[in-house]
Length: 307
Image (cartoon, rainbow, N blue to C red):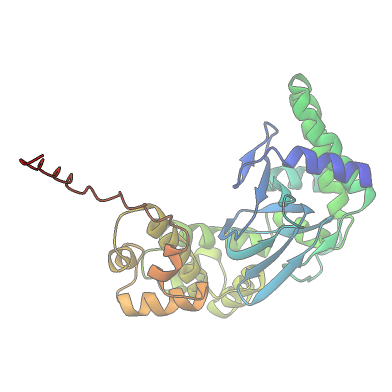
């Protein structure tokens, strides 16, 4: 298990300071030193080195090396990574989840028991068998001719190992077309596509075939947020990106992501990130050094005519 973890860490050290493609289907890697605020897609997230605190709605996940968690739906999350020590950054791998692949595996396993209720977001220790499968998968990156044949087989093994573990029921909900999660996915996709628009919950509930009360309950169960809280986090994540990379002021960006009040935006931004927009973004922008001022050349002294 130790050798597998070491090999995976060496592999992930090739990543950029963002999610980086590996050349393997649906497998990404990251090497990070600071925060990780983003919309997490459905994935299995395996931590290899360092640790992370992840805020999803009103839940906080604390993830250590050789552990993993399952993200069942697209969720806006605020993360803080902690490198193990200088020179040893946070390293992680992810496998993006395809409901069709999980569904086909469930059909092959011919599982009949009803899905049990389980916490949506939880952290589990990786087993030697699961870590071994991850190791064999990433080693395929060095043998690209084998990827098409072997990667799907090893992906199924990883999914199988997770199905046998404490987060298996969550994975089952992702793979079953008749699950509450599958119904909610339609509404979540709509909110993501229209995050800058006001909405009413009743049409979203109707979109999923649920009553308003059931929709609220299941939405919160799967995202740890209400629909309005979910939309607010999407807006604030997008606003931060725009503040970092576009030359517009905070008020203009607030309106562009759907806020009707710049002061409300500033309050909610500070509540989420710990300080108002301008102060927060200033921490990440390197000031342009001032050019040295050009001074007029000194006038040479006139020679003494008596010399």
